[in-house]
Image 1: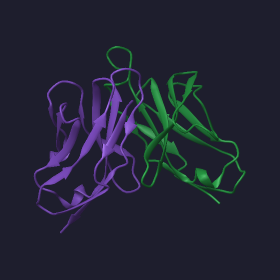
Image 2: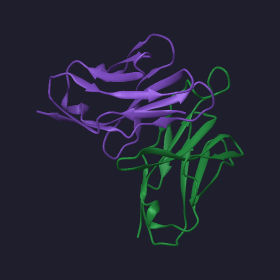
Image 3: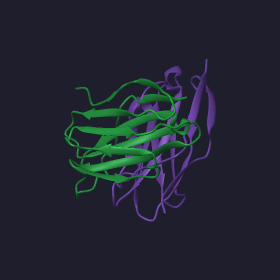
Image 4: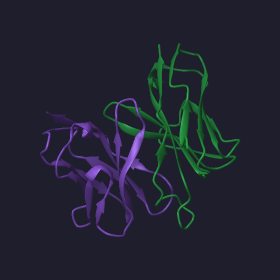
Length: 113
Length: 118
């Protein structure tokens, strides 16, 4: 079975402080994992993806994520939050068989000035 | 490059009415998907297509039908709208992966259609 759990529905950080958005996954296969960002009234935009190459993945806008198989986690981090980072973030999984994607329920990030 | 375009952006229907949502992509992608997004539930797959003329059911297909007559277009139909279908609908597409599956290829999303059924 495949599933994605985003451990926090809301995260609030001050501008300039680190961001940590947590994602755990369950997969019967070695998965590909993705983080997407959604700004208000927009579609989802790809931040980064892990596809069994390097376990530390760098994405756009200074975001990174580390694939930890032993912990079945794929947490998203950024060293210093910017006001423009305020958005909804989704973790997603696709097993390396078939073509379905499984999404977490999202984490809303608030950045306090 | 437009990417994935959804029309309309907004729509209000009365219970029992029908409508069709149109998705168009200009990236020559094989795979196309329809999702609905509801608060606290993330994205749920309604139907998807692995190529022109083929469709398959996703997680929540009831009350919806789809068609993919042309590779670049994927239509989502509601034959008799219900208030439970009030949602934001997203179309997405991606390309074939290296071994024939799409799993390594990220989804490209449209900006969504906000549907209200009263």
